[in-house]
Image 1 (cartoon, rainbow, N blue to C red):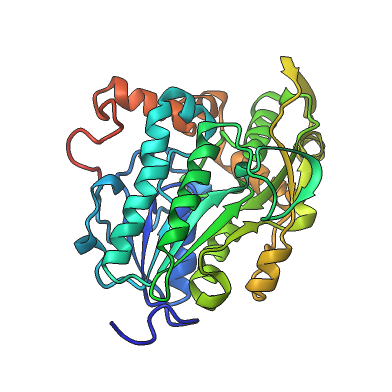
Image 2 (cartoon, rainbow, N blue to C red):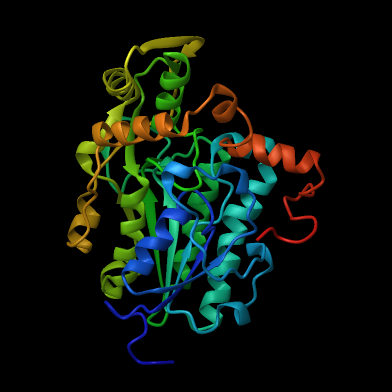
Length: 358
C-alpha cells in the first residue's frame, strides 16, 4: 500500500455505494471534478426516477452487487469508500422493519469490515440527524442524546456504534450525520420534505402539511452533501477518525411551517393547506454545525431553503411534473420497492431477481 493513501489530498480512487441514487448521482460528478476515479456499487432499483432537469446519471464502472454480498476482494485498491446504499426513509422501515436493520446496520458493518480487510484507509458513512429524533426545541450538537423514533434512525445509530471500534491508525471511519436532504438530482425524490412541498404546490396549488408545522428540521442541499463527502475524504485523518459530524449550517434549521411559507412565496398561486389529520410530530431537532466547521475548516454548505426552493420550482416547471408522477412509484422510493416485489423483480429480502439493469 502506498504510504500516502488516506492522507489529506491524496485520495485517488473511491468506491461509492448507492452511486445511482438521489445523493450518489450528484456526488459522483463532484468527486470526478476533483480528480478522483470513481467506481460505483448499485443494483439500480430506482432507474424510473430519472429526472431530466437534474442532468444525466453518471456513467462510471459499477460493481453491481448487493452490498450484503461484497467481499474484501471487491474493495482492493481503493483509497476510500463512501457508503450511501441504504433503505432511505422512515416508511420503508415500516414496510420491512427487519430489512432496515439488515441492510442499513448489518450491511454497513459488512461493507466496512470488507474495506478494512482490503486495506482501504478511509470509510465515510452517510449517517443522519434523525439519530436525535425527539430532541425538542433546543440546539443539539454531537454530544446530545440519541433518541431515534424510527427503524431508519435506529439503524443509523447502531451502525455508528459498531463502526467506531473498527477505527485504528490504518482505518479511518467517519460518520456524517446529514440534515434532511433537498434539491434537484438526476435521480429525483419527492418523498422528502422541501421537494415534496414544492411538488404539491406546483401540481395542485396546495402546500400540503402533514403535521402542525411546528417540528424543527435542519436541511441540506444534495450538492452540499456531495461536497461534504469530498471534504471528509480529504480531511486530516486524525481530525475525524471515529467521529460523528452534523452536516448542515446552524442557521439552516427551519420549522416545517417556515419551509411551507418559503414555498408559498416561491410557487405562484399556491397556498398552505393542512391535512385533516395533521397534528404534532414528535420528531423535532435543531442541530449545530460548529464541530464540522472546526474539524474541516474548508467545508461550509452553500445553499439555503430560499435558493433551494427556487431551484426546485424551476426544475419541476421544466419537467412539467404531474401529480401522477410525484405521487406514484416514479419518484417515491417506497412505492417503487413495493412494485418491484409485486413484479417479482425483487424478492422478499429486497434482493434483485435476475440481472442488475445497466
